[in-house]
Image 1: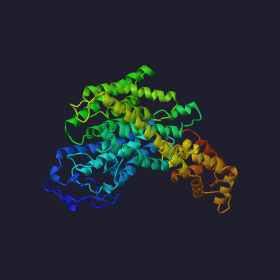
Image 2: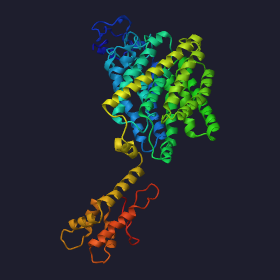
Image 3: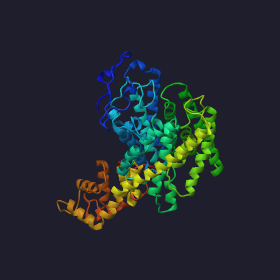
Length: 571
């Protein structure tokens, strides 16, 4: 790949006008069709105010993916919280690399028959620098560096596949997930980004508008989520009690924290999508907050009418529904329209969530009902609410409404079919679903070897030790262990030999407690523990470990001891 701009383009001298060098097209081996349209590198063309706002917006959108991890993590069962957070965070890694290598070129590079971008346009972010304004083929003009625009759009690409994870919570293996989101980014997200956001994309030239991702992000991710739950099927439970427990949010404070982070980040998600800090950005940010707050209230009103009480989780899901709905319209409508969209988004998304329950679709965190159908509603209603006085790129009309509806249906159809096909093909190579044993144990442990909470780890260690004592150390095994440790063959074991025995069983004990335990186990007070005394000691350990621990503290084995003696520390 030949650099279009020499290294001198990275100079920070605002008055420096850098030279231009024609790009090489790696697809057909010739020069791109319109080399004269590529912008020259000139720091004097960069607007510092717009650049500052876009830097902030990029950081805000980046902040949304950790927010999504907390939001989803709080909604799932405690045995799957690390798994779904890992799925969100790993998207920040793998999608960032793919976007850097080829994704940005496919989405915003030189178009190939209006279908996809030329992968040789910006591979490894070549031909982008801090002094070259955003321009052809990314857009018709701009006042921010093209490199900044690539970074900003990278944050959108990161969060889009992460949204899908909420649908198939508790039932997706890690490696197939990595393969899926990588292919989904290349075959679903990048094409839609090019079709709608690239000036030469065929949907863009047809007149389709999507301000910040109602179609590109929310419909594509929402209907990919629907395809994933159709493919993976429902989770299996051994009882109704287990099903209820698995579907109750395990940490509502995480949900509230994540929702707040999402709303905060959405100010940059929508507010930065105009690419400048002008009046359209003001409309976009204000409209987003109006719609989110209104949707929160209407969701709670519907929830109270339906189940009798409004909930914190419902309020958080409602505000996200409002944000997803206003996203395609944020920079095209006036605040009164944002209020109407927010008011409708609450009952609209709530209704679709209840409908999927009626159909028994196991969309664990309602990605389809909230993001997919919220983005669908907002994108279609843009045709009826757009105001050219806000943004001249769109104005309401019957024709515009019809085009938006067609684009939304096409997006839903393409994303659903392509996502299902990808899952089907991946499953032919490597299983997508975890085994029943892995799901029963919990994906956090079976896939990642970690517990989200220490008390779960303690309970698991206690269970393993009990199992070890019960199965690995029956009376015959205890006799064999005793004779193995009785090295001097005097029929007794001393404190050091007792410590070795406990260590073999997985029990840790300090010196004071060891002496106390040895003294109490020595029932005949002859200075050593004989075989019968050792068998009784192991039996007592089993009984002590079988008692429930207090609160979340580790179980403690207590040996009867004088008041001054120290207890046996935690197992």
